[in-house]
Image (tube, rainbow, N blue to C red; front, side):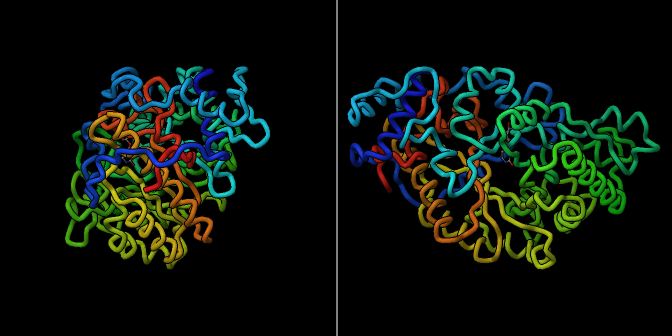
Length: 448
Ligand code: XIL
């Protein structure tokens, strides 16, 4: 913990003091866009259906201690950072177990960007069951959280209860909220808001939800039945939060990943492994927005969320046009699963601006920036990419564009769904990496 506080203090001091200059050895800057986001798709829904969501699924549950990154490499240690910080005022930060800000100090990301937008983090239940290791860092840096898996349909839909009472549940599948309670309680405790992720998605949505008898092998229901199930699911989920936790959820990913030329029909609507497409048809995403607007409260902003947005802006804008004109959608969530070889400064930010120009709010909903090799050099490059990302979003916001959130997809490299690519800001020991200093706009991290 102490090392974390020292590092943060140093980052803050460096930020205001302006130590160090550009780092040498800019590596891995091969330039050019990659289809990295495409290459990092989640497992398909079949694979995820049997997952045990009780304990936090996927990387969260199995993640700890299995990271490929070699220990400490590229991390900014408390000692290094503390020493750097000490050069300004002769101290090494508070070091008293409290991270509260002294005058002029910045406690973390949320405070640094408080004039711009909330800063979020995706958390699996694993984190809440080991919260003493993570709480301080979360509180110091984030004021918004997203459940990494626990608000997805496979977490909220209740198969047993739906099957048990088919006469009453045929058009209205049963839902339960047990899996996401740790996140809700944590958010309430710390006065944080929640980004809801996600209502309508081809993945992590169990097959039984689409069948006649709510079994895995049943026959798929027809369009009208599935539209009614969709409406009732959206009504019940949004209704639950409005009734029990008014004001907690400020943004909702209504539809996730509906457009994908490689896996789609002739108009680029995703067909592959997509039972929404199989049952409702190619306009399923539009109906999801109709229902979401019908049941959302005014303080819940409605988002379309997708990966690879910077490579498919036109596709997305064309498909969302009708929903937008009818006032059914507020914003676009750019997942932002990036790589150090991606062009963030121009390509990504131009896409974000284009969405804004069309009248959408933009949120970066799942930021992580992967490196191929986890050496010191590549972590420095990663640092400059994080810096570029946060600075770019901040610049757009300061120019008056509605950039309304930046959320990182996980807390540390060991917990990340991309743990082979060390894509996050903290290493497995929760030491801040150059990526963190970059996000903090520290001058020790080079500007690209
Ligand atoms: C990922 C989670 O991080 C994993 O734990 C899970 O096993 C699969 O899903 N796009 C999304 C997120 O919208 O929901 C995905 O999250 C990552 C890609």
